[in-house]
Image 1 (tube, one colour):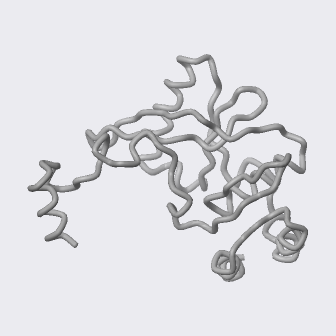
Image 2 (tube, one colour):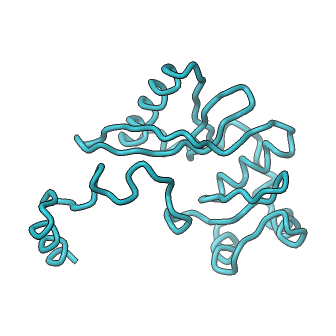
Length: 175
């Protein structure tokens, strides 16, 4: 833990408090790994492709968009921002058909300082490239039907959603 971290910091000259922040982080300017996050992970089959969902909220939003014929694509934008004087990057979730870059977040997390900084950076980025931007939260669409376990199990049985047993059990506990 902490002792090993300090040894690595001294050896490689990283900042003493965190050796892997900002551009020192090997994930800087890269998409998050499929193992990142604490959400219920799954894949959604749509238009001949699998969309990786890092949370159940993302899955429900994507299902809503598909069911309502709202075209979207996964974002490839990389947005730089600074938080606690550390350079960071992140990739918004999707782009809607009207060139709106969207970040999907639970409404309560939009108020966190780090997410406020991300959003300000996304607004500047989108302004520079003549794009629109917005958060999409659970409050934006009527996604209640996707909380029905039988509905989700039906989509899993029909191979529309792929989810491993660990995430399925987590889902069952949280619905």
